[in-house]
Length: 143
Image 1 (tube, rainbow, N blue to C red):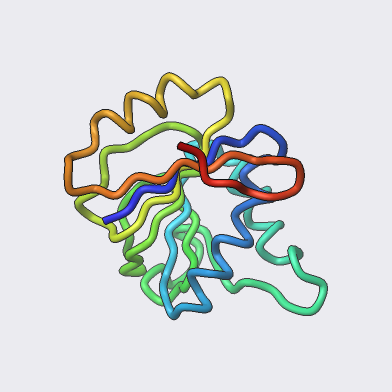
Image 2: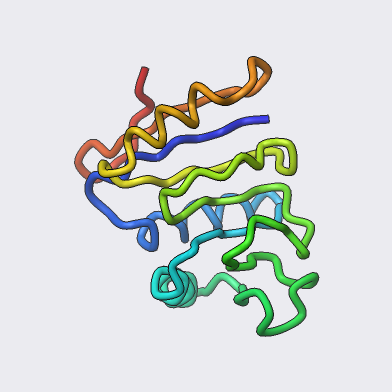
């Protein structure tokens, strides 16, 4: 089990998630993207359709189609009817779901740094933790 903490200092989640989703899909995985913010889910949905000029990332919002068939599912809930083993928490609100997924991408703005620290400390010893921060236009792994 691995949790990647992404501190969003430059770009919002909707700009970062298409790349994460593409990597998950390239490896044959399914992804659940979670946010309590409906407007954010709309922005993420739009970004998944338009991130690359020559392609799109097939997805749906929970309850709007056949959830179980979706390779990428956007939802308010951290349950994966699409049997995703990867989850991206996009709204910066930590959910204790590490037992349900193989990998968690936790994206949070600087205003949620205390939540991220608490989440980091709450994870069990067997969980691999990685911290990423934006350095200019690229991501670098922090200490």
